[in-house]
Amino acid sequence: MIILFDYFETLLNSRSIDFNRGLKVFWENNYRDKCTFEDMKTYGEELFQVLLSKHAEGIEFPFVKEELPLYADKFGGDKISMSVEEEADFLMLCNDFEPDPGIEDFVKVCSEKNIPMYVLSNSGFRGEALMDILNRFGMGKFFNALWSSADYGKIKPCKEFFELAVRKALEDNPSERREDIVFIGDIYETDVIGACNAGIKSAWFNKKNEIDDKGLATYICTSPDQLSVIIR
Image (cartoon, rainbow, N blue to C red; front, side, top):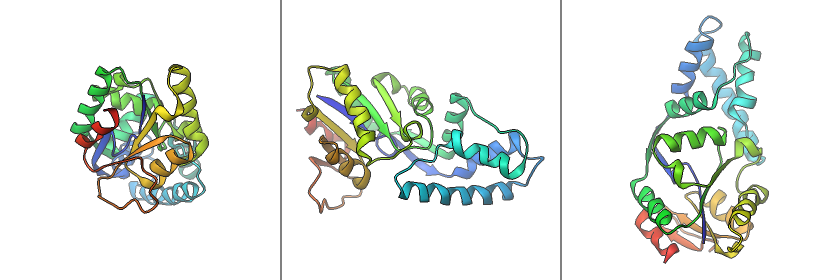
């Protein structure tokens, strides 16, 4: 067996989300002499609409590679980049993260059973930054690899994005087969449909207790303790 995990609201929950918390620190460090924070906040809202339009086309809008340079184009000055640690800090400011205790316990059980685990995430933030955050919570050590759409360019449910993870996982574990892979995620449209299109099983972490109208989910779990059914 091989398990692939979604990242946001699966491995890590956000108690609150506010992009402007990170943006304000970025403005204070780099742009306070070039524009007001309200100016930057307004432009950030415009760029969020760009992100939504790209997502509607199945394309990612990488934060460091594509979004950050646009602030320099708009307000002047040198184009600012971020190290992996700075990017992780920014994301932590925007999201008040906490590991899901039940998921954390499940991951530890899978590790004890020597089940290979990977992460496949839709995110505008690089995979190295996402892994940095998992390491800060003591969880990174459980995962063999993490892929972010920021690095790939397309978002789930893109079949090719899933295939990137499936191919690598099977290369790492030649005794396993595609039918031995399960993807765990909370969003039906990206996680369940994406896994189905890639020909792998899905465990829908159905926190809102919604209905599987299409009947695509292999497993439906409304709480972390129910995930144990996939490893029995």
